[in-house]
Image 1 (tube, rainbow over the protein chains, first blue to last red):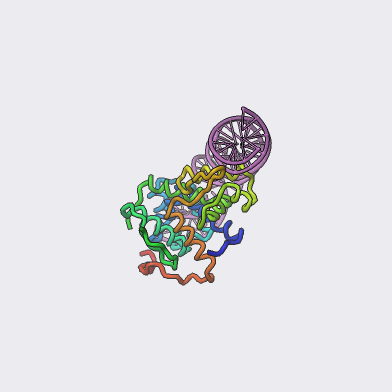
Image 2 (image 1 turned 90 degrees about the vertical axis):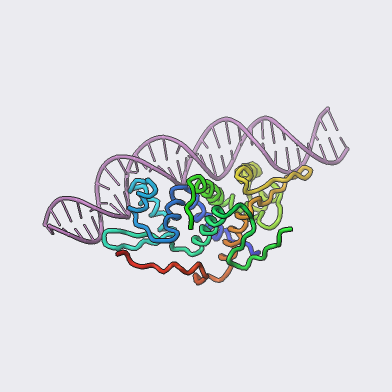
Length: 114
Length: 114
DNA sequence: TCAACACATGAACACGCGCTCATGTGTTGC
DNA sequence: GCAACACATGAGCGCGTGTTCATGTGTTGA
């Protein structure tokens, strides 16, 4: 396992930091499968329009979400496949029965459980 | 894909929040493969003994790390297989060549809004 | 063009968080 | 016992951040 540069660590930490705020995490989760407009997100999560937009700005600047204008509406979707992978992994683990035997999509060699 | 309860979301967010601080993330990464004592961590990362211990306390309370006393020393290791997976995944993605063409589940074709 | 809609942005405040300094707790060797 | 070591914890400070309120920008329909 190679080491990461402090810059890489900082980048990863920044993504984690943004996902570490419950409202922002819920926003990203709401965009996990399908695009969502700002209004939809705010209403679904019970957040004010302003707060929703502020959070979306941070997520967009960090390249976690991507905004697409469609008429009056602006739809947001996840723009980082890796983040999507991590979150789907999280959701899968939390919704599946509580056993720790799982596999990731990459070549992580895992030791069989005794 | 099932929805998460707000409690589950809060738990996930808490883990992300803790990993979202660069020094804490580096601490956890230092414990990714092998156990590390507090002194080793502090020296390796250039952190004061107090700061190292404070961060370790948060990580231990959140069940991300686990502490094992060995004589005068206390060794920390990752206590959450899921966190270890996520981090290994992260490291793998960052150390591999920077192409975005890894496979997610392939039902993500998006259609414009009606 | 003008009003209404949908979203973005700036300012300001309250609270939390990372950090340091000092002190406390537990362990080994003499 | 006590001194030295390794780590934990409490107090306090300064700065960042989540939130709200107000205002600005862009778009559609009449």
